[in-house]
Image: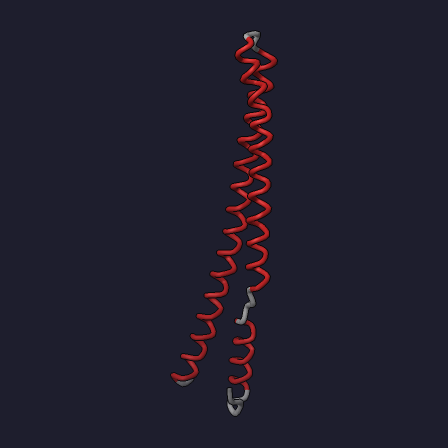
Length: 121
């Protein structure tokens, strides 16, 4: 195998590695967005449950007022979290749809050149 062939194979492998890294980065971004949404959901649920608990278990009117405030706050936090999640997901999807992997084409060209050295690029 010639040095030129080795360099060409390394370029193809490097391109594949970059695309794998990019693909994994996109997956990490999607998962981070989902984790953030789950954190908003958890907080919203905790606020609603705290509000219901204050109303149900305490007789003091101050606690009932706090409970009555916590429930709509929880609903608002849940709505904000869902809205942020969907906006970010749309943005991620638009970036993902414009991404075109090219390593498969590079690998095929390299394989054809290996089979028939007379092919020119």
